[in-house]
Length: 486
Image 1 (tube, rainbow, N blue to C red):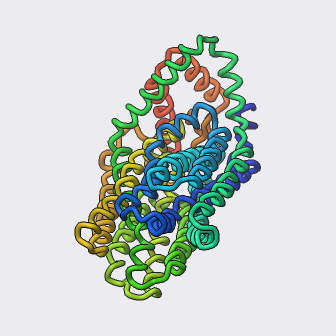
Image 2: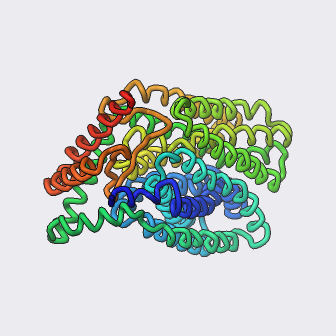
Image 3: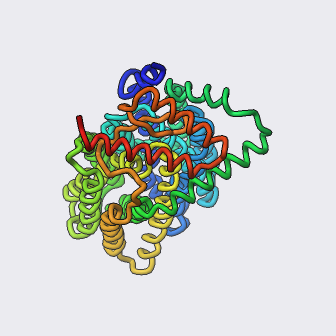
């Protein structure tokens, strides 16, 4: 009976409040994330320290956001989504306020790049995990709506940053962005734990014997390391993370240098910022529609991801060929937002299908870390190619080719997928508790009690691998039962 009542908030009720909070937080993050190209141009004009060095300002923010993924994932798992989101909002506010006092690129790399990037990483990880807790049958749709917040942030971010720079200058722009970024804390305060999370937390507190704080810390670190080692040995997951890394490399090189590139073709700074608005409109629409499509069990989420990402890469390759006029630049931006926004909506469902909900936070963090490598290296690499060859077109050929390569690599995910992993479907019928434990909504109450008892005993033994094996085998058994049918 308790199990039944604890699932009432799944896909309904307060779950939509959680989705709304995550959406608003992603709007703030998307606004900062996708305006790095405009910020890069503003810093280059104001400080005149060279295009390669200036590229590190935006790439450091993008790289820190995702390279610290395992850290933000561990923080989310340790203290919950609400506190992690608030911490992320405070980091954004502190970083952008410190950028107000910066007078050179080196200090901007520390304040705007590292501090703000870490804050955005905490917020996006917590929002994705929170929505994963509250949604089950509608998870692909919820993920699409969630990431569409970043698309809306892309829509308003670049023009807003350009307006703030023109009105208040570089320092005033950072100060105003810090005030806007702090609003993420408001959404975080509403991210309360689900009923099932609270119930299992109480049970864990009553059953688990008291230990010394040092022992608890060491055991938690050991479990985290064990979990990440398990993920690194999952070849299907690693193929997906490498694909994500290549995608991030190409996309960051494309977006950070886009304003400078189109201005070299004769486009005004204001029209260059409008390209991101166009990209944001199509990206927002694509994320929602892809989330709806991913909810259909007849559509493979991984195949949809591969196809859309490949088209996005081809679009980047063709930009130098069709970039002579502003109208064609608008069309290219529209198509890129359409093709690149969809795969973002599928990130959460694909990770759940590959790893299960239990390891979602760790998997999301590790995937972001690999993506961060690409985001960190993409813009400086493009800047280096530009300084060496004095040819922007070659930069875009390489960026688009990298995205296409990432799309091709994702095709290997089903080939190397471990038998112990979950089947790659668009609709994963799972629920989970405070530890992310996976179970089926068709299990009987006695089976739920048995599974909970078994998880508790395994927890006492401190064996994370045994817990994962138990839970995954339970999911496979349920899948067999569903295949048999009534």
